[in-house]
Picture 1: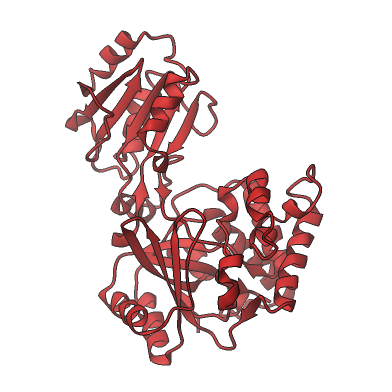
Picture 2 (picture 1 turned 120 degrees about the vertical axis):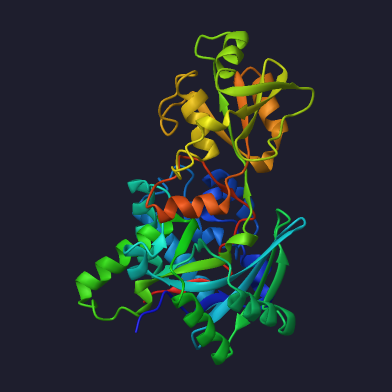
Length: 416
């Protein structure tokens, strides 16, 4: 029998090695940064998730020897008993802490079949090269090592179990990473709790991918290839037909703003730009950084000055889950028609700045002369993300910036 999620035999570090193994997600560091972070840390999971750091500097990160090196490094940690695999299928509670923010989720295996039928819902396009990379990595390692970040509409039944586990059991790991993010993981091995979690999730209408579209898409491709090659179509509950996930309730997730900086004013003067914006927005000069305090409000910084922009309500298409997003309102009313950037995915005149860097980063990029104007946005709401996914639509690029990030290496999913 297949279910939306299931427990699995986690591959994880022994408690004494958890600090040494835990690493940032593979896709938040480039090769140079990963090499620096892993220097002097032979157990760091970066040797598995970014194995090109152990090969000559000019190595193509997509070369076959990179994936082979990752498998070699993983096997080494297993053979040295730095990583161990649980004897029985388990769930794991995972708590993230960043400053005053805290969220507690469930490490589980999500159904590829339900991903394929859109019960595990998407909101982003994927890029073939990045998918191909993850397919090769999963195939070489025979494991999924980068968890997909999922969310679900909050459930009292799930919360009750996670609260009980985290209050009563000693954690497997409780560590603070180099970036100050806290990661605490508990083992869930009570059969009644495991069954209740499985059944509760299986009764949900949908799960939603928050971050990890390439990881989930590649897991689906790997499963299809294994099923086709080995005739395993009937073994829908086999490990390769599930993928590594951490699912958090929607009301605990934290999305930060994802801001925009643009190189020029498309031939307009600052005065002309403000006049044209005023046709659709109420423009209010601000003596301090104009951080938006609600949806449909924006900050703009140009020529040393901040402005608060409030879009006129009649311009918000409330029956359109994509068009009503703040990123769409900005794109459709200013960035495209006034600044001439039709496709923000491909136009090199626009760049994106994660809100964790603060509005000071926007001022810095403009004041340096590198950029001419910056826009600050209110963070996308989880309800808006789920509405887009429910409508089988796609979010505009760079709509969400989730913090804090999950760590790689604390629990992996073996698929052999």
